Image (cartoon, rainbow, N blue to C red):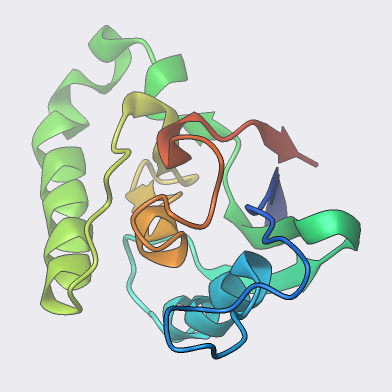
Length: 152
């Protein structure tokens, strides 16, 4: 089976040129803060999480995040067709959430859109840790749950 990659892109908040904190220390840009935190997420390995692969800073604070991607998500599945798998899918979701919780990461955007199903209908969580990356939404000019997604 070949790996499919999903890509998300958004703009980090910008700081005025020469911004300093209360003590006069120059502030680090929001995009650099995001990149610094991202590498914690790339170390997460769990059978029920989509693996984060890379992050790139583009021009003008644009951030691009690449992750493992599956084309089937819970939103697209007829519940009648997977009725017998629902307990297993719920167990997978809870297992992924428990793994994140043990690492002090909350999902903050759990929905049928980002619960993916692999070829054997095993659930994999995507879009986790974005609230953590964005410093509780302080490093982005919008609520992190409303990221416009590009999937290739």
